[in-house]
Length: 119
Ligand code: FES
Image 1: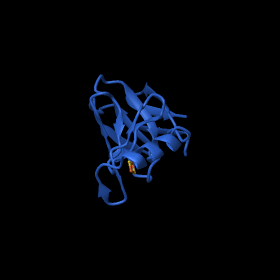
Image 2: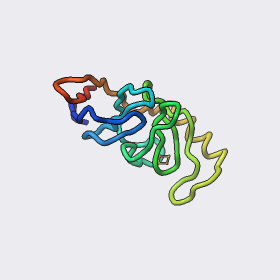
Image 3: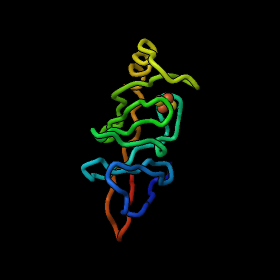
Image 4: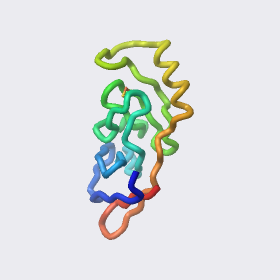
């Protein structure tokens, strides 16, 4: 993953977008974050996800939720491949292995009108 990427500072709270290998967004409180883009479940692009009311990044495919401060999966997927629905045992299994596969968390700074992300 490249070391530095930038995006404009006009990110609205509660949104996320792609910046190189990062999913860069703002929590509903307006705090900027950057995490690596590939979901730990089936590698969906998290920059196409959403930010929920708690400030977690939600995967666009099966709605796994990630803490953007630690990169930890805090809720497992609801489904797999093309299936979307309850999968309690499978969800717990994925949540278990994902504890060891956190997303990378970038450091975000405001510099010259841009959000700059560094490892
Ligand atoms: S690919 Fe992210 S939850 Fe399935």
